[in-house]
Image (cartoon, rainbow, N blue to C red; front, side, top):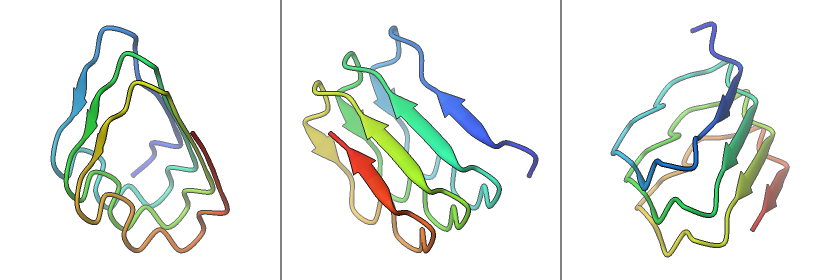
Length: 77
């Protein structure tokens, strides 16, 4: 519950289903160009999430990956 920021390393290629689901205090996510896939419900109910930067290598964003992220105001691809 104390997780506030996530920076995914360059060697990571996939964020699994529900990986950060219900991390309510998470507010910033940075996803590198090396990542290709974001799983279903990966950031579900991350109500504190305000900013997401998604690298150009992402070719698949799963179903409901950002569902119930009521605070999300900025997504940069």
